[in-house]
Length: 275
Image 1 (spheres, rainbow, N blue to C red):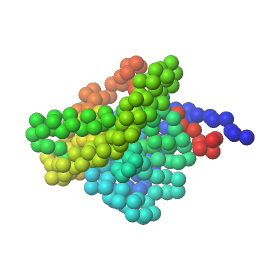
Image 2: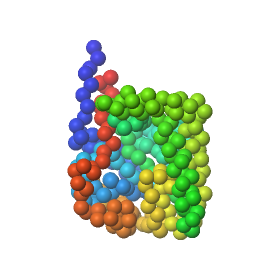
Image 3: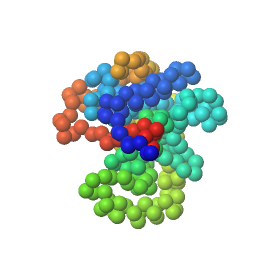
Image 4: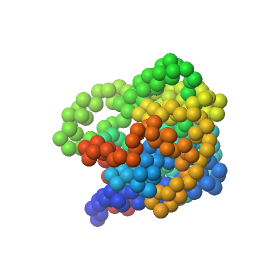
C-alpha cells in the first residue's frame, strides 16, 4: 500500500538543507576546495547566525578552478560524494542549469514556481572573471541574460493553484519548440563558454556571470581570502570581505525586508520512501 506523502515543515526542510551543507563543507575541506556561503545563506549567517527564518534554500559560490576540480573528481570516478548524494549536470546532452546543484536523493521535492531537479539540493555557483571595461561588461551581461531566459523557458512550469492551467497553456508552445530544437542545451553551453571568457585569477574583478539575477562585481581578490563563520551551530567558510559584499548586494542588510517582500522558492520536500 502506497504511503501517504507527508511534506516536511519549513524547519525540517532547513534541517535537511543543513545536512547537505555539512556534507558539502566536508568535501571541500577534505579536498582543499575553496567555497563561500553566498546570497541569502551568507546573509542569514551574518544576520541570524543561521537560516533566514523564511528561507528554504542554500547557496554557495566557488572560484571557477575549484568548481571545475570538484566536477572533474566526481566525473573521474573518485570517491568524493557520500552514498545518496549526487551533482546535477551543468553540461552535456541534458544540462539542468548552467551551474551545479549538490543533491540528497533521500528527499524528493516539488516547486510551486518552476520545474527543478528532482531532489533536495544546494546551489553551487562558479565565480568567473569579468571584463575590465564597463561597456563590455554590460554587453556580456545582456547576452547572458538572453541565454538565461532561454534556459528558464525550457523548463516545464509546475505552478500550482489558480494559475496552474493558464500558465501551462501559455507555456506549452514555447516549451515544445525549445525542447525540440535543443535550445536549453545550446544556451547552457554558450553560458558556460561566455562565463570563462575572462579567466578567474587573470581578471581584476569577478562575478557569478552565468546566473543573471546575481550581479555583484567585486575585486577578484575577495574570492581568494576566506574565514569561518557560524551557521546553525556549525562553522562554514565565507569570503573575508563578506561585509562589503553584502552591502553591495543588499545595502542595509541587517534590516529584514517587510513581510510582503520575503521571497522563498516555495519548495515542498518529502522523503523518497513515501513514494
